[in-house]
Length: 99
Image (cartoon, rainbow, N blue to C red):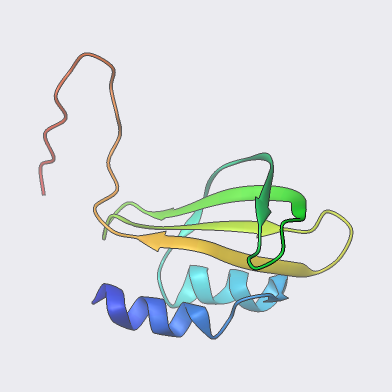
C-alpha cells in the first residue's frame, strides 16, 4: 500500500476513539500490537507533555508500522507516526531482509 494513502487515511483518525483506530489498524492495515510501554509526547504548539501508553503496531507481511499513544484514563488515542520497511536491529550484525 502506498504510504501517502496510509498517511492521509490515518491523519483523519487522529485523536479519536481507541476502538475506531484499533479496528482500522487491524482490519485496513493488518497491523497488530507488537510492543508497548509508558511514555509521553508533546503536541505542538503546546509545550505541555502528555503521558500515556505508547504502542507499536506492525504488519509482518507488508513491513508497515504505526506508533500510537493512548490515554490510560479515557478512550482517547492518537497516531504519532506511521512507516514502512520495518526490520529488526541486531547490534553488530547487518540485517538482510528476505522478501
